[in-house]
Length: 91
Length: 162
Image 1: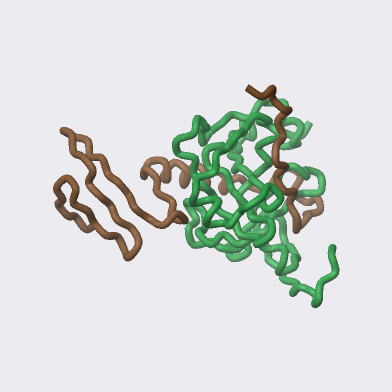
Image 2 (image 1 turned 135 degrees about the vertical axis):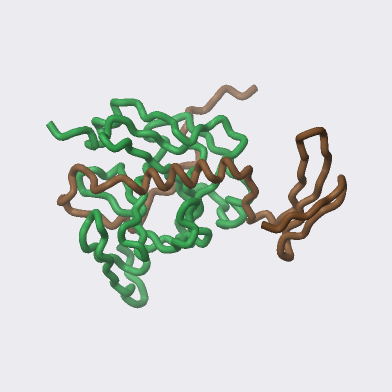
């Protein structure tokens, strides 16, 4: 892991498109700002790791109970309807 | 199926759960960012068993052992209101509702006693481009492990056989 020391308002470039800025430091908490292209996902690591664990648990599921039944290759899934909820009274 | 200028290339994959599956190349969904936990996987099929049409498996065609169970969240949680982060709508170039669908990963405990759904990280699929991405709704009230009420377990047919 590359470790760099920065003071408040200093920043780090990750690759060509991502900048990490030290916005504030308060005792044991650091406030970081991330500038990145909009298609890049930025998340707290523990959230990302929780999703990883969840996906791996899901993928551990074995063959479904009805295994042996014909498999359908779902070429087309249904688009999401614009609004599934009943119309609300306008406020 | 709509007629196309030329027939799509047919392919097969020998999956560990479903045996040999034959599909058209145009059936594939591409995950350019992979999935958390499986960041290298790109190509998936959406499979379901004829008897369990609401239970979909995202089957990798590059790793025959990899498949994730997913389902339509609104069938179980009709008030689900995920707010898509910019990186989802932009990265997938989603414009109108007819362009995309949303599926959530389902975790089944090993004795099939409980099922949970990951409402915090839905899978967004652009139906036109067939590109997909799992996005994380970090600041939403939704949980990675939302318990699915028992009545849905029986309806899905995943409860123990009688």
